[in-house]
Image (cartoon, rainbow, N blue to C red):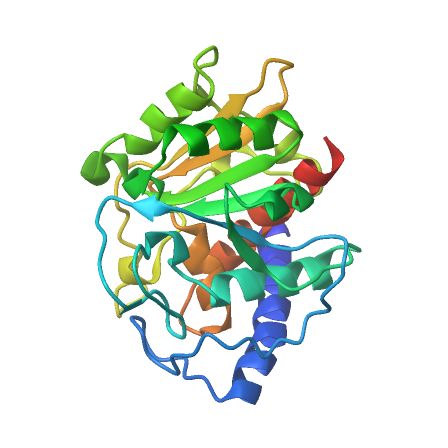
Length: 276
């Protein structure tokens, strides 16, 4: 029954998001950067809701020029912070609008040094092992988290990309350790019940074969960092790609169960950030 319900929810999300995609004329394709490449949002989210998907801008170690970061997004300069933008941000926002009573608003992206960041309790960051942070940014991230902020990290592969983000965490919270998540953690049950069996590999588009097979990239890890009061303030999702699951939620070939699981995690993280 749970499996059937997951497919139903995934199908409803896919139908809703696909309606937006068809309206803008975007292609579904089979992966990569197929379809339109445009930074313009046509989801028409209200500008003043109680919650906005906030993405963290950062300088990365790989540099680079102007490049595609998703099927529709293009960014210049340090670009890894923008991976899967803007579709992942828009699609999770649509999911929150449909699956909860949260009054959503248009997604945003800011540097940790921007004072506006304190208006957003939930912060998403991707490809974090390429992240470079100055002492000023380290201090600002600690301030954001100590003031009640929550950071979700995604799409990092420690067996290939090293442990750069863990070194940043050690600077932000030298008193704390990175620990493994468990079913007992409140973000696992705040809205959806996420069990140990659900801590599984969520594939990126590149991990899907033409025959529908999923090709895992390392062993998925689900870790957390708590503040000095014991509140979880950082969720570290290793060797898994929820951003792609959100970005490709409108793609018929992307597994519906994986889309549903990624939404469950995303919704739980958001609600936890707003209530703890």
